[in-house]
Image (cartoon, rainbow, N blue to C red; front, top):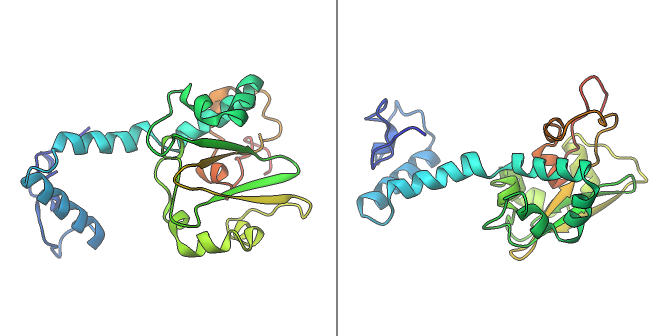
Length: 223
């Protein structure tokens, strides 16, 4: 990780925007980023937070949590029937067995896509999301249009994400709360039997674990 001083600037950018508390015409940061940097500097200057604490938080969300964790969970369920059953029966413990646990992942439920049902996840009240396995939620997940429309017209929302399902496929929408968060297990791509667990994980996308996408096809195969 790049070292920073107490203002968040780096040795290569000692006078970067992190040390400023007002926007400049030459800044490459947008208004929101500038406000965050200004707030960060203010809190550090007043001694409310420490730079080391901020760096630890940044490292956590850059390197330790995120959709690659979820992809590993899904891939394990594809190759290990016992783990799959564990995941479906007690997702919190099954996921924790892979060392993916923590805040916003205390009460997990895994739902499985099949030839008969396709699952989607939303938080209609706010943006509850399983951080340990999916990281931070994308902007569209938090948007009012997604939160309201997915429960009314899930097939229409899926179409906008480029997912067209057979008419016979039932769509189930799960509403996350502060107590329960969901992870969708997408269908395993066809003709993937020869792939390793690591190769399978590379086919699992963030959206496929929310239900707004499908797992990627095996190279050379059509979706």
